[in-house]
Each structure stands twice: as structure tokens, then as C-alpha cells.
Amino acid sequence: MFTIRTLNNIAPVGLHKLPDKHFKIDNNAENPDGIILRSFDMHSMELNENLMAVARAGAGTNNVPVERCSQRGIPVFNAPGGNANAVKELVLTGLLISSRRVVDGSQWVQSIANSDTLEKDIEAGKKNFVGPEILGKTLGVIGLGAIGVLVANAALDLGMDVIGYDPFLSLESAWHLSPSVEKADSMEEVVAKSDYITIHIPLNGKTKNTFNDDLFAKTKKGARLLNFARGGLVDNTALLKALEEGTISRYITDFPEKELLGHENIIVTPHLGASTPESEENCAVMVAEELRDYLYFGNIKNSVNFPNCTVPYNGKPRIAVSHRNIVNMIGQLGAVFTKYSINIDKLVNNSKGELAYNIIVCDNLPENEADLIKDLYAINSVIKVRLLK
Image (tube, rainbow, N blue to C red; front, side, top):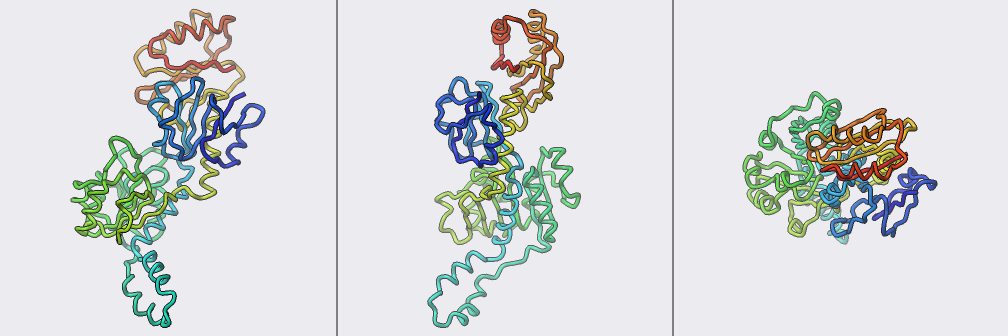
């Protein structure tokens, strides 16, 4: 029986993927085997000794202490693409309201609700809310992952020219991306050519403040910037300067920060990107299935810190070993299995950066299983060993 703690409300359709026969959902468990969360900030939490996995029902994992989890051999799962359509639709909304001053116009109409000459006032005042059409304009998409590809393709359908940049374009994204999207060699090329720019990259040490004074200096005058990825990707001080100078004509973001509020050319939404029932359900189902497959069989799929590594279950016992990605680990593991006369039916080893993960399917196990596990832990750089029968 595995105990799963939820740190946020998780869609029931997802939790139903964890059958009562093998899983206990306890929102207050002190020593859970797994954790499922959405936006809860885990950074101040202690990680209990028996915690085996963390699953974030969404794409970003900034609220999860990934490095600490890695040090303990705890995979952090996420749901890439689970909220992609929801975010795409909000980006398209942002694209339109960045041009057509719908929000400003709507607020103005409400402000004159008590006018005795309402129709006349509206006809006279609507000229203050003129905005250009997006047809025939150029959209720059920085980051062509699941969301970026959907946005790029949809913008083409709306009659825009699209230029995209992603130095790490995956094969799957390349398959789905329309050939009509122009491929840029740099972000500087994108911002120099685009009337509208939308960001779809992760936030990390290398990408923080991607939009800074230097990049704004290369941006086409009057461009509209959309950020539905992460707030820290844009340097707010540099942004406000770019707005004042007219480099950026409007900024639309889903990440409220105090210095952005009250500016006439900034529209801020309250982090609505994944706030659809469909998105929440998709993400909950994805991470529940990932968590279940890992706890049952040791399989890893969609982990941000460990490599994908899956072996179909064939009824035989298996041992999962996570370790630092160093030379001759396979040889050292093999020597331990030889010591105990264990015949290996299948061994899969994959690595991701500094970490590696193995699934070893065995034809037999020794009577002294505890000694086997102890010897595996004795190998330098081994982080976690799990025996799954």
C-alpha cells in the first residue's frame, strides 16, 4: 500500500488512476511515499525519509526543490503538454487584446454607465480605442515546445507570418510544427523582425531576465510582448524603460507583480494559463499515471531530473538503481549481481546530465535480498535502490 499526499486540490479523475487497493490518498500524511501538487511551494518542506516521488500536475516545477530531490534519488514528474491547449488559447486572447484595445474600451464603457447621452458618448469616445489588426503581421515565437508549436500554428491560421526560435527543438515538436513557420538563428533575429513576440521557454538560471536591456535594444520599435511562460523571464526594470521609450507598445503577462500594475500599456491576468477544468484534469491524469507506473514498476516518464527509462512488466522481479552518471557503473552493478548468481533478463540504463537510472529485470533473486541491496548501496555514487517484485 502506497500513501500519497496531495498538497493542492487535485482533479478526482486523476486520483481515480490510483486504485484504492494499492493507494491511500491522505492530504495530511506525514510520511507519504508520493506527493502530488499543483502550485504549493515545497521549498520550505522537509522531505520525509521514505518519500519516493513527487508529481507536479502542470509543466513548471519552480515550486519543487528539484535539486534536493535529485540528491535523494526522488524523481520529480510533471505533465508537459497537459495544459498546452489551455495556455495556447489564453496566448491567442492576449495576442488580440494587445492589439485591439478591448479591455480599455470595456472599462471605459462601464465608467460612463450613468451617462444620459450614452450612445452619443460612445460614438464620440470609441476613437480612443483604435488598434491594428493582426492579419499580415509577424509573430515571433521564442521557444517551440508543446505550447509554442500550438501558438505558432494557430497564428498561421489567423493569417499571420510566424518566425520561431528554439535551439533545442525536439523531434516531436518538429513533427508538429508547420513548415510555414520561418526558423530563426537567434532570439535577436526574432525580436528584430516581429510585430508581436510571445515567450515559451522555461525559467532557470540561464533564462532568467532573458528580456533585458540588451535584447530590448534589438527589438523592433513598437512591438507587443506577451509572456504566458514565467514572470522572471522579463526584467521588469528593463521592460518599463522599453515601454517608456516606445520599444514595446504593450506588454501582456499572466504573472502579476506590483511594479506592473497600474500601467496603461500593461495588461496583467491572474495566472490563468492552466485555469480550465480540461487542463486540470489532463495534468492530474498524466502525473497520477506517471506516479503509479514508477511506484509499481520503477518506470520513469516525464521526469524533470531523471531520464526516461521504461521496461514493460513481464512478471519478473526488478531492481531500480539511481546513481551519479560516472564511468563503469554498469560494470560495478554487474559484479554485484554476479556475486549473488543472479541472471539478468534485461537491463536498461539511461542518463540525464549528472544522474543515471537503471532498471534491472532478474530471472531470480537470492534468499538474502537485504545483503544484495546493502552491497548495491555500497557502490560509490549509488543514490537509491528499489526492489520491486
